[in-house]
Image 1 (cartoon, rainbow, N blue to C red):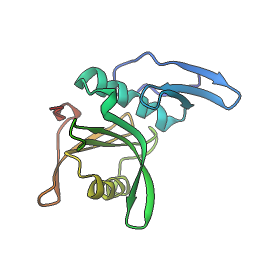
Image 2: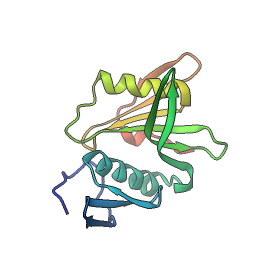
Image 3: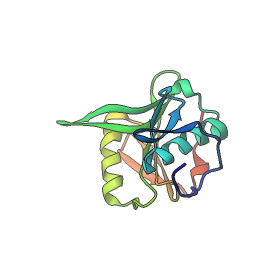
Amino acid sequence: MQSLPKLQFPSYSFKAKNTEKGWVIFDIIRKKFVLLQPEEWVRQHLIHFLIHNYKVSPNLMKVEHKVTTGQIHSRFDLATFRPNGCVQLLAECKAPEVTIDEKVINQSLRYCEVLQPDYLLLTNGLTHKLAHLNLADKSYTWLSSIDQFENR
């Protein structure tokens, strides 16, 4: 498999194979093989982390789903939902070499205005930033660790 960095997640077993288009990895949420780009490497680790560490049901996750902010049509990277359909966690995954900066934060906050999640997670696989969002006053508080996510 191509050389990909060790991330700040536990190790997981992934199904991957080399094709004429390059390496692909099996996404258990989309139930298909997808091109293994650095951002996808991060997303797949995060999916498994949420399932194994927080017992988030794969049935309550969406990957690469369309979101419209104003006139702009985009796709969020990963969201987890409560059984009632409300977004619990919105995650923006970046390649390991991409810095989690104001541009990434602002992009994600635009998605939050539409999706109204309880939590926002920004990760490049090496750095994780988790915020708890207060929808009533449109504020957010950065938490000290990804371990402060509560799946309830």
